[in-house]
Length: 420
Image 1 (cartoon, one colour):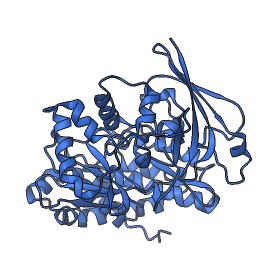
Image 2: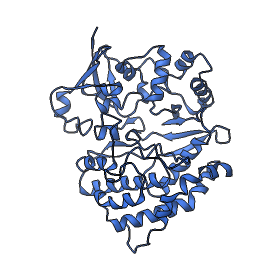
Image 3: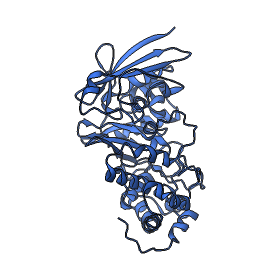
Image 4: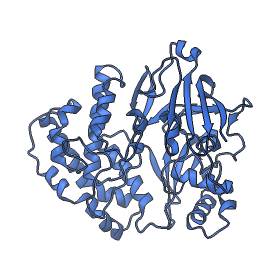
């Protein structure tokens, strides 16, 4: 039997009404519809929630498997794999997609969208408060128990609610306050053979060193066997919420099995990232990230690991880079290909050949590659040592940084071009 629910979609701390979501809870074919509020359309500061969800009157319908039943920018505010597993275990049943969405702790929810239920209450107000970093030892223990299942899973999941239900990805993590800054605490997995969290912090710092806008990261409990990576959230400015959508929503990718390319992002960025100079800057930033992804063997570069923030004066800009994880065990395919010409191969030569699509001359692109590769090669070991990685750890990660594409980059001719 179908059940219709109406949810008001509001924005930020002021709860400005943006639109309405109708969700049809049907076990065989759930679907939803979204409509912008007329007062939002008339607001001079209003914006479309994503480039594909145009700021116009009328209802737009959605259906599909999993989170595809929701409009993409609203699905970005719902939990992903880890959060879904915590919520499902705490309930002891499989919730509907709307229940997943409304069960997330409102304080820690990704982005600026919030949801008001039929009782005019912001959901969710029934979850525990977001924990603070002094609770990390307990949170680490709970996450380990939950992942290994050597516990009363439902009881532990209920203890994790509020901190662990709003976060994406498949690895154990929590939303926490690092003093006054909303952050993500990322824990080692019971399946890890490598110091993944130490490596992620080192890689984000390395990304900043080569000129990439990357998330701020540090380690907590650094001297312990299983340190915790603290990644500052970029969708908050103090208590203010910053509108955010994933790369998946930005290009309106509805089927994660469809091939996707960085040039797909480029196509949408041209009309969504501001004036000419602003767009050129964003394209150059994206191109740096493509090069870095190849050079550090990051193979987890799917579209949910790219994001965009709505920034002033009224445009989308790339969020700081996040979830960059070098993979030393073999050169596999990229999740996001460079372009249709090269498919999913992590090829430096292919990246240089498509540089003009990013409004970068090939000669300048070659110089960018060489300079980035040189910087990485000269500093990556030191960055790893600075976060407490042992000589053995560094040796184990060496294949992620010493490989054929890095060699090609280091052998590029040193063309006499000044990179703007």
